[in-house]
Length: 199
Image (cartoon, rainbow, N blue to C red; front, top):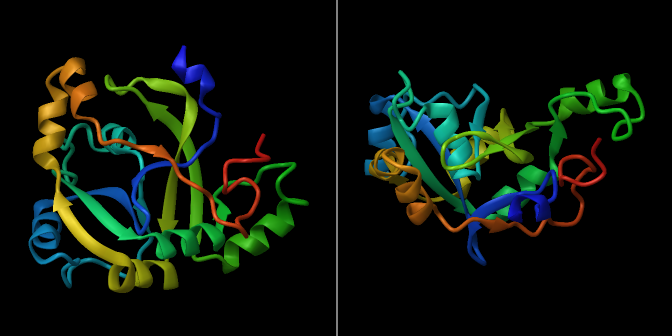
């Protein structure tokens, strides 16, 4: 099976030489304005952690194919690779992992000073069932959230129609899936964040 060939933790994304596409879902007041203007509106809170997801299917699982309240508009946010790489280099796992951190106190110190959190959650198939490998999420706070909103964004598209079209059948979903592929992890990324050396 192809899924057995995928490393348990690997960053996969739709990316070019210069950009990476991540996904978020919002209520219409934020999502539609962001897609229209190519930037988040004033009602978007820069002082709150915002989670970006390179996996389209994980976003679909999280927002229920754009049907969950407050997540009715799905955005594909194209950001600069240099920004995404900066986030990876400044990220810490959101949970303590023996073997990755020297001890719990060291992890807590890193977590306190990092503007970026990493979570590895089960990837999903086109029926949104969990797969045996993981999908990356990045939580951006403080400096990272500000950079994301003000410096990294190249473009924002409303992909809610794509979500709705894919929700109809597994066959449709498979044919319409964005072409995600392994992302080359830059140097200087902590163990666990890159997907390597994790329990």
